Image (cartoon, rainbow, N blue to C red; front, side, top):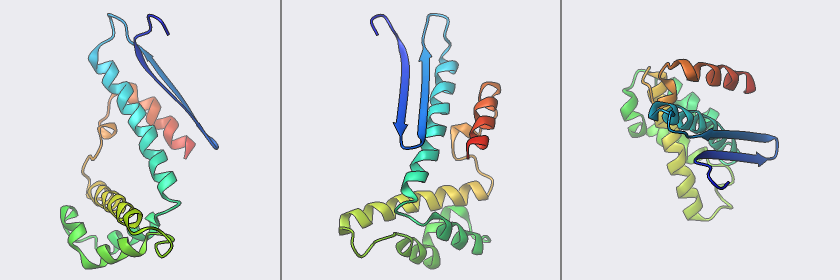
Length: 145
C-alpha cells in the first residue's frame, strides 16, 4: 500500500460481499471522491437496515406510517400510534438490556422519520440526487435486492 492514496472498502460477512476502491490521483476531482463516498453510503445503508431487521420489525413501522399518511412527515414521531408501534417493533425486547432496547428504539425512530420523509417525496440522502456516475450503482443496487 506504499504510495497508494485513496479509499478502500472491503466487506465479507455471510452472503454480503462488497469491494469498493478508489485510487485518488492528481486528476481526480473532488466530485468523483464525493460520488464514490455516496456509493459507499448507499451500500452501507442497505446493509444497516438488513442487519437491524433482525432486531427491529421495520414492516410494522412502515405500515403504521402508511396508515397515518395524512400527517406531516416531520411530525411522524409525535404520533402516539407510531410511538407505540416503534416500542412494540423491538424484537426480544423483554430479554434485552434496557439500554439496548433504548438504542434500538432510537434507531427505529431514525428509520421511521427517514421512511416518512421519503414517502412524502423528500430527498433524504445524497444518493437520491440524479448524477450520471451513480445511475449504474443505483441500477445494480436494485437488482441485488
